Length: 91
Image 1: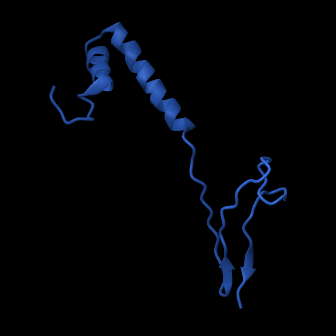
Image 2 (image 1 turned 90 degrees about the vertical axis):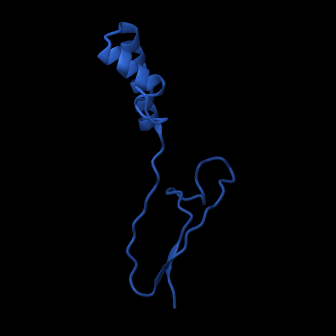
Image 3 (image 1 turned 120 degrees about the vertical axis):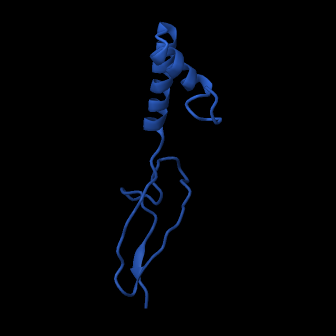
């Protein structure tokens, strides 16, 4: 089964599917289960991006800053929310 690199026909996952599911080898079925489990754990453990949607009215502005954490408490500016950005009106 020749295929493109990275497809199901190549590599450990391809061998596990071919020999474990289709071939019936118990060892390759275990390998398939481990590979799928590792990929699932990696996908779940991957940090999700933080997304903020805010609608601004006419004349409003939004300032976004990245402020370093100086004291290691996890709070950026000493407030309970830890937010260091401020929204104000322009003009």
